Length: 427
Image (cartoon, rainbow, N blue to C red; front, side):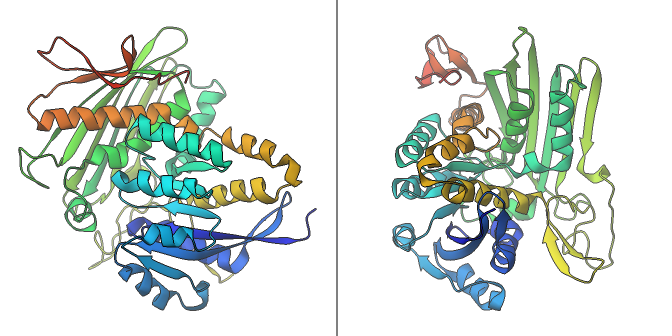
């Protein structure tokens, strides 16, 4: 059993809402107790540097954190990421808006740093190819935060499928509604030209892709505009995405994923999620607001405190023994990444590092190399919505068409458009 202790220094790019909900409690917890595993012993983890646009959030956090965290250096634009990478960090967490993930992740991988990227990893397969290639060249990990795969309910669904208790998915429907405060205030600085499908449907795309397997064959999408931005503009209030998958026996399944970020702020569910998957021999139904907890507090719910509390994702608790804690799968997924990095770097002899690195890359729940069909769906959706905004609605993208990996078919246009020439599956 290893007796020595190790240190991993983290760099953080972006300090938005997701930082407060998951990264902050994670870094505070590992500052206090580290991460232990028999393979590598005790690994201390510290937040060493933050790169952000203005540095205001980082400075406010530094003032409020006190002794819950070691002192970190804050870099702001211009050139904040380059300064962070020169600050002797071992891994970098990228939690910027989704259309800025690629540049930050590329810079970190090019500098030989392990990288953890918030979902979606990137917006195109060409970007994914480049990051995957860089990670291999530099012999580091590139991982994606799909925290909902660690949700106990989603893990149970996958368990039943993997064990054959639920046999052959036939179709699926998922919906995720978020309040206007998400699009109108929290994300207002980067909302122009964006859509809620890329932001949150990707959770369900990954769930479907990872849990049921199969080959993605086509993508269709439509949506609504007029609340977040002009009715004829490029910014979407809600989207309706349809994915078609084919399975080894030749059968197909259609999955519809509906997302919105214009639900009223005082809607009781605040964030409302629902999913249904019919199988040959059963039906899986999941609903966030029926998960078991409802709490109303006069003057606080549903805005200051949610009525339907998701204690699985991120909950603060007073433990029976008097300790205050914060935990949930949103935090657990970050610890898992650190364990993977620590195992690669400290989990055995140096001459066996490449074998440990290869093993970590086989973890298809989060490795960037396993993100191909998810990114294919995201790129297709983004392109279809862009064409719609430009006056050509109802396009379809076929996957691994005879002309290329992603091929767009537009109504009234005889010639298909190749969006990505390489193979999506069997790459």
